[in-house]
Length: 562
Ligand SMILES: Cc1ncc(C[n+]2csc(CCOP(=O)(O)OP(=O)(O)O)c2C)c(N)n1
Ligand SMILES: [Mg+2]
Image (cartoon, rainbow, N blue to C red):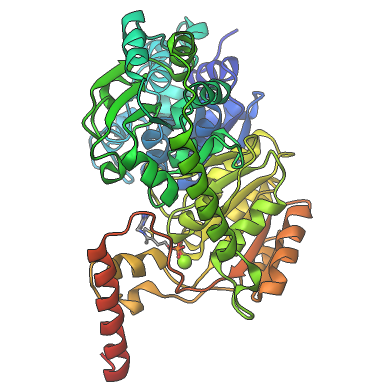
């Protein structure tokens, strides 16, 4: 049967299990959208193309499977780019499709002209224009293969005349388009790690340890070594597992910071933790990762082994000698319990009569969420509240913008994740600044019956920026940092969703519970204190000084009028 290039492309996507195309239809994309319309794939029309790229990124981060987004000629595709960095920075396989004007119009500065292959160059591992039907099968295959190999973003430019033309040939080797296999390390490397694991050690786990929780637990038991994690590793094990001591850094605990600084050996597995100043200044570091290029780049490292977490851990467990000394373990456990108590106090709703502290919002959501909920975090102070106060079950999932650190990314990623399973509880936790950025994507949720629950930390400010200024001794630029908000609960209702407002501590839990219980998308507008200081497990005395200086300057400005 004869088919168009668009149908050929959509046919390949269908064959490899793609369930959705997130996009915003228009001119050059019409032939592609028409092929999607006739396929089993669902077209999820978004309000802003950045929302399409983010939705695809969210899906790909969660599942490791290819997700797809599309924008039309020129500005329609330009909007995709920012969202695609989420997939590229978190190494998630996404295929981005840019419609483009018919080829006869190329090169004449026609309306909406861009150079998509140039524009997408930085964010993509592969970008190519399908410039003839005969080229299409091989280029489609190559793009998807590149997205999986990275993993990361692949991009195709689709001139309207080419994708509506009759296809030439068929796609081959479709069976090869899948996530890459795990890498088993060499025997000598494993023997060398085992030989060195004789000191009091800490095991640091990142996103690369997905699926390896049992093996990590077994190694920890065997070595009496505490397990600590990067923020992307947090979801892997239950918060109250005695071996899972907590995170490192600002999303982390003093107990873990001390453990990492004081241990004789740090074994890093599946993590490219970027904050070198939190990594050990004195201990020996060994790193295992399937990405050879990340070995040794964050901290002086004596041994780097290329291997995936699961096969490496399996081999190691057979080789390492068991330990019985629990002195180091006991010390970390003791400090961890103290830190946890402090977190619980900070999240206590009774802390203030009239004001909601943001920690209570995160803890409230955590306490009421389903045991298999998916949390999507945004960027800002709110990341610290969500990541430090949510007590994950081990079956819950957590994604965010942890490598791209972009504000305004959670809602649209949540939409993508929710589309995979509308019966799963998906909760986006967002600052008011972040929600304002892409609030139109709440309409995408309403439109496509995506029952995403949105929790807004409403402090009427780009909160983290206040802190950033203060930490370097600058006076926070209030006029630039603070802003008015709409009534988000009323906005939710105006959109056709559900809205709940919490201004006082005694309103918070009911608002969260009702939002989680309703059928359909919902917003909780939680009005929180704007002057909350985050915990700093590692505090520079110099920085504390700067805060004091900034506070004094602020007070002076208040009196003098600046
Ligand atoms: C897209 C983007 N723009 C700007 C920044 C810089 N930035 C980091 S945090 C932040 C404040 C975010 O404010 P809000 O969403 O209200 O969260 P809060 O810090 O108040 O919890 C900004 C502007 C960024 N990281 N990403
Ligand atoms: Mg804010």
